[in-house]
Image 1 (cartoon, rainbow, N blue to C red):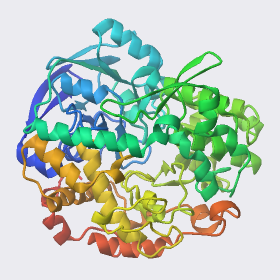
Image 2 (cartoon, rainbow, N blue to C red):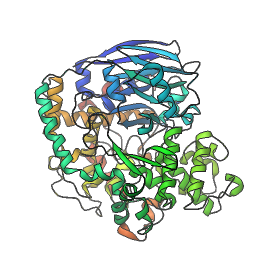
Image 3 (cartoon, rainbow, N blue to C red):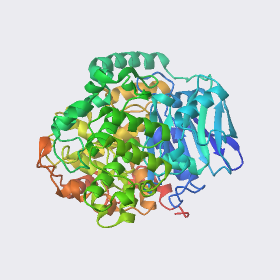
Image 4 (cartoon, helix red, strand yellow):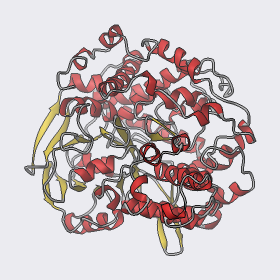
Length: 609
């Protein structure tokens, strides 16, 4: 099975097609894996993330366009300007499907255009077109303008004004008001640095499968199963988990410094949204679950806030006004800002204000905990790079370094990536998971915490729900699930229903689509190969085992109340276990024999590093 990628040269406005041979596809699968391979091939760990030398890669997996449940996803890969290391972001919606219909499995954008442009990927051709009239438009307006210019049905990936200004929290948005985001790591700033406003894809090509009957039979079986197992996700979306997260001591509160908030949280749950501002739900391509929220209030109409957004723009700032969170979410979607890092920047600033490290003269207005209007105002300043927003537009790690006065203590990140809304003091496996995630703090790079909450996965040795208060075994469990998540990010499937998806289901699909005879061992080895390849990129960027770290607040300060009042993770012991299980040195470096066993020797001695 070959995969077709367009190499798009923005400086000249030309493109060429590249066929990735079957042996490369089988080795790296697609999506995240092939995207990382292409990042090495056409970029360099030494490149400045915002320079023309840093490629921006959109990559589908082999499941795109097959109808396999939850397979309507794609990956965006580049060197992250937020972290200065490996960057990727997973995204759902419809763009990947339309890119496949347009005749391409991936796009590699090289260089920089001298003026604003957009890429039209239509019926097997890539054309670079003048995007001057789109520059300055928000993401909703951009999609409508491109539909008018290029026709529908189509998929649009675009940046908002934040990406144009190269705000390091900028994301890449898709599907207009339905607002699916490649959200993390500042990849919207990379797009802005290239003067690439948008990509629009449209076509009629269909995905060819080796055994379509077998794929469709398994897809129908699993779609029915997912709908039976996940009705709450359909009714309440990811925000349906907010109340339980608060109860367990997982939900971030007051910049990760507080333990419980039982009464206030009731007004910002998925159930509260359903009772107040919800108007419907929406699903990504090929998804029977449809967890996306549609809301309307006070003149706003569009996607409702997800769990992570409620956690970061809401509870972490002690804001319990659902409409204020919805306004912040709508602003971020339009301007193109990651709500996780955006919310982290606001909570960080509110704590600095409370502690007197910054004041009203610094910001231009008060920043009191719980002030929804101040939250929206500060997000606007960040997206426009105005006032104190100029400092925060660099992310909390760099902002803390500029502010000084001990501000570094209150920037809650790993490798420069702000924490998502799950706490390693609640689910201890997240300690090693966040610290070793190649893109920085990420709950989905291993998704291990789900097995400390309610799930099992016997194929990877989890026969019973894990004790979340115990450190032993948590380093080891991360390895297997990081490898599996690398597979899912490369096949391109949503992770929400994955615990209801057996490895044998994945093999039925992958062999049915490709015609391969892949077995479980080869599939998991591909996941291990992909993870180690990302690690090699980070090592070449200058990261070491010392960067596998967490903030002192998480390691030394108990929450004090709630469902995780007194627990603290032992990161040191988890990492010892993790490195040994990975076959790495005690300093967190892959051993030469491990790299050789995975067939990655070619990446060890690049002269341009």
